[in-house]
Length: 167
Image 1: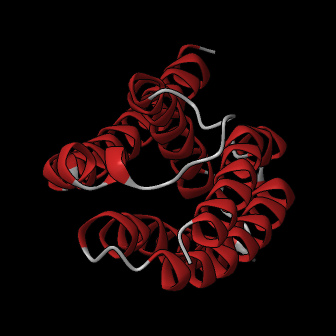
Image 2: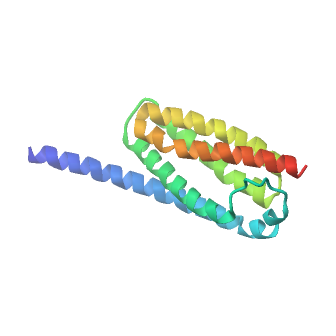
């Protein structure tokens, strides 16, 4: 019985470490991406046309912090739970995460609002596919990606509207 308890404790500890590592990496990369756009937000973004329902700039940091943590925990769960779709799900996650990081550079640093809109549409599809795969492996991992999908859906509409307003 003691060996069984030790095994369970070891499994939980391993899951915690994987989820913590993934959340930390997602958060660090997300923060780095955010810092890379700071100057452009101050010198370009404030002057372009935006809809009246554009969220205040201070809201993006806390929202993305929560989303990156949830994304990382979801990735850790998928990494921990062996499944036939695990490798594909992790590759999909990495692909959509790269698109996530690239969107900021395209939109804020390159000021290419139209290209950013095209890119975020692809990212949105990739997030949905990733969410589906995560849900198949571990339901809670898929559920953790739902707020991300909702936020990026909103960001897609916002990006498209800003593109129209500044064409």
